Amino acid sequence: MRAERPGFAREPEVTDDQIDDRTAIREVLLRYARGVDARDLALVATCFTPDAAYRGALAEGTIGDAITALRAAMERYTATRHAIGGQSVEIDGDTASSHTDCTAKHWLADGGCRTVGVRYHDHLVRGPTGWLIARRDVDTLWTSSEEPEDG
View 1 (cartoon, rainbow, N blue to C red):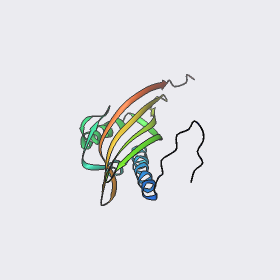
View 2 (view 1 turned 120 degrees about the vertical axis):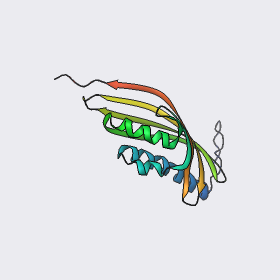
View 3 (view 1 turned 60 degrees about the horizontal axis):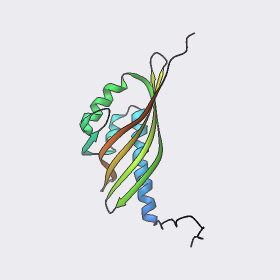
View 4 (view 1 turned 180 degrees about the horizontal axis):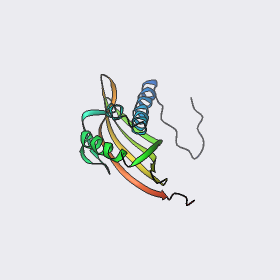
């Protein structure tokens, strides 16, 4: 039993199953980031249901549309680094929603770097192989660019 602290709301109890589900959902997001950074589009696809809906800077339509656009976008960069940040998750049986912040660095051939802060709004479903993203909406929160050094 947790001690009550004046002025603070009591945190809800969390079950072991809820912790396992939250961990599995976070792992889906981390696998997505690893797949994008490794340019492994097959790995990226394993994070989504085959008919997943997608809305973001890459595309609007299906995850297939987004992966096609991602393949073309990768050609503009020499490397990327996606860092998954804060995440909130709500689980209701075999469905869940998560809101996850990500900072993505994109290095250009000229030595410049474009950094983007996004928030993934995901609707996930639990299936026989675990949690998968069934819908993703991506909001761009901010961008920053660094020019290559003259030298």
